[in-house]
Length: 115
Image 1: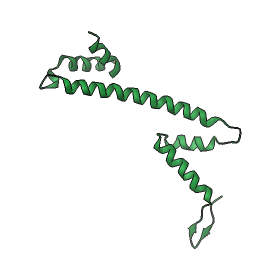
Image 2: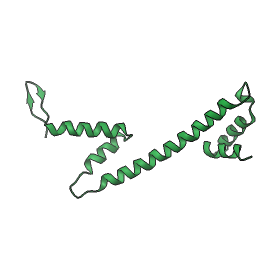
Image 3: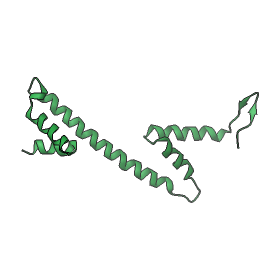
Image 4: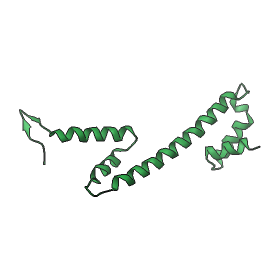
C-alpha cells in the first residue's frame, strides 16, 4: 500500500524513519542492498534469520580484513625494499611469478619469506 499524499507529497509513517535508519546502518557496516532487503524480509517475531545474515557478513568481513592485512604487509615490504627500482627486486619478481602460477598473495608472500 502506497503512503497517502497530502498536497501532492507522500506522507510516510514515523516507522519509515526507523527503517531508513536500519538501511543506512546496514549499508555502513557493509551489507549490499540485496542483503538489506533479505534482512528486512527476514524479520518475524520468532525469526532468527537475521543472525545467519550477520554470521555470513562477519565471515566475509574477516576474509576481507585478512586479505587487507596481507596486502598491507606486502606494500610495507615493498617500501622497505633496498632496490631503487622494485622491478629489480628478486622478492618482487618471485611474488609476481607466484601470482601468475595461481597462488594467492598470501601464499606468494609466505613462499618469498620462508627462505
